[in-house]
Length: 89
Image (cartoon, rainbow, N blue to C red; front, side, top):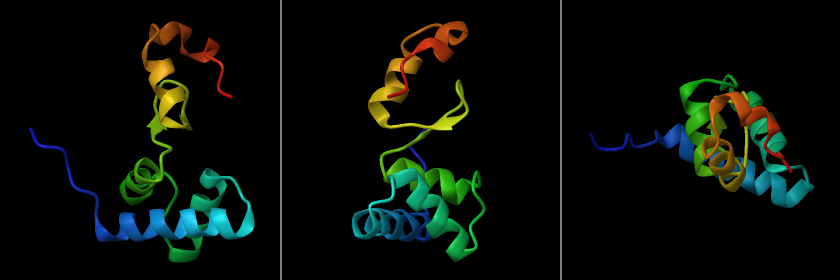
């Protein structure tokens, strides 16, 4: 099955969040949250999750957080019962 393409809303949201982070110094996930609320996109929605993935902070179900890809990959490399022990910094 081919990967699903993100919507234009997700792409615009991710770009807006990255721009906001660069302009304001907010961390990227916080910038995404602010940008999403300004655009009327609910955090946790499909568009939000796609935008987070595009911005480099995919959702990690094991710890219920948006994490940098490298951290998410470390969480995925351990058994799910040990996921909460992976350093998140």
